[in-house]
Length: 275
Image (tube, rainbow, N blue to C red; front, side):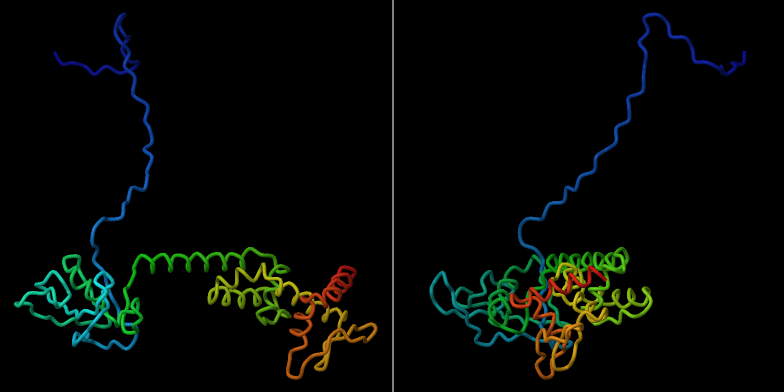
């Protein structure tokens, strides 16, 4: 007889029969488990400048100071030897050329003697030389990451800051502020990308704030800036003389940041708060 598929409510649990329930699902917590590998690592060295397509490193009479033995010893690279010191190499030692290609030489972990030779070589930048240096990929990556974050932060300031907060920085960098906001921000964006760390720091720079106040005081006729000196507009009294060839705005800014000019800065702030 053909069986029919039962549909509808589930069968009734018989007395004494254990109820089976599905185990609750738990979310897996991801953790970063990377560990730096131990032991020797493959490394790369690079020519500092003008390496050309190929560059053969000199091995003729290369001597180094050995601190452990307190003596000057000759070194050379022989792939079939465990030591780079000539006096520890066998009679069958065969020297091999050390060649940089396109300015770089890659040293696998299986060649610790080549790494030792390059680390000891007098032309290595770490030994006071100027020819080549170790290319530290980890340091370079971290450095690039820091730069990218600096750029992101600087660009965010241009995007999020109100124009009143951006104007002092714009004036500090010599940006023409008598233009539409979009044009001012565009110029600031270029500055932020070219020198992000300096740009971010400028928002807390007291010189930036003081220069902005002096500039605004000039715009509101609180002070008058002339090639020979900076004057109070209402009384025409001299605040500070301007040396020949100096910018009046820079001169008054520097003066206001000194102890002698602190009273002038306070007067400028008072005048501007009443305008």
